[in-house]
Image (tube, rainbow over all chains, first blue to last red):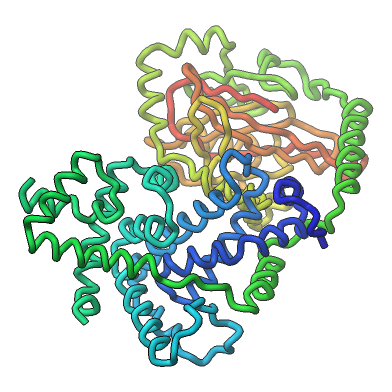
Length: 198
Length: 333
């Protein structure tokens, strides 16, 4: 096992040479980051989040030798996640497969398989329920967005990237980022109108 | 600013990602216009709800499940040992170099000299005539042209025809590259031919990706074997069914099913190594490359590891090419 004294740069160098222990250490460091992104992109679908996160790291390992360090490792993982997610969406569209996620949500799994949602402490059970229900509705509204708009709104409003960074990550012009974000926010505002009224 | 303009810009006004003048205009408009002001409030609340979504942590068993999948899908080729691997690689490279120095011995022509003695020989480049070569029954007379003749024959028309003929679907390079990156070899399917002995058919999905500037084209449907009547090295390009039938007859390939060829789009390439002292030779197509004046066929010949084993053979490789009137140049790598 690789000791903790190794810096990320050393781990990346070793992983690029095929060192599986070094790569595992990198996975541990970045799991929650990738998992969160995948969770947002798949709008909280557990099985898809799991699959997307795992596939991201597997693809990363397979492509490690080509990682040249021009961007941050985290950014590189981000790009892999988004690209895989886009492929996933395209594949689902082809198979008209959109509805299966609701089946996956059947609460029969072991609690260790469920993501741990980090909610504010100090909420009473009623407030906690309201918070979770609101989160579910918002995630569902994000899930209903077209994939291009969903990608941009996740990067901006959930991940906090600047417009210019989004343009670079998604390889689209800055103007397209703005138009997609504006459209996404308008669609969300319409979808969440009942919640806003209440 | 009117309400329509304001409505368009409000989603980006939420995080003030507009020019200073736009921001001040919207601000002034919102102070005067209640509907726009209410719309802005809802947009702002929407964005706050999205921004307020909680972070999640991966399930506690995620890493365990990932590692199981990782070990299943990314199997190590051998246990990791950096220095061991480097030492092994160095030793292997030294061994290969030693073998090349000790065993390299270009084979002399085996059969009687013919007027085609400048045809493809091991470690040589041989431009083959663009028009249909005539076959002589006994010795595979290819009526070749030399490079100068080939160059003369490739006029502007043939160049244009080459461009047209080679406008086939792009090779599935990404897929092949992905297979390569995953450490997989090109797809190979062994096929038993009735009475064909060691014959095998290999099918590749596409030519492998390469970094050359010249465009690559693809080949398909390879037929290979180690028994033919061709006793001297020769490369051939066939552009008609008559020529193909003649080849099948003269090369003694009757046991091998003759391919059906759409001659408007395809032609046949053939590489014969001539008589070799042992079995175990393998001809591998490496690349088809569209050069300005010719279609270049790059191939490699793998020599047997056990040089003393087996009986004499005459290996060959036959494959489909995109039809072109331009010369075809065979290059052994």
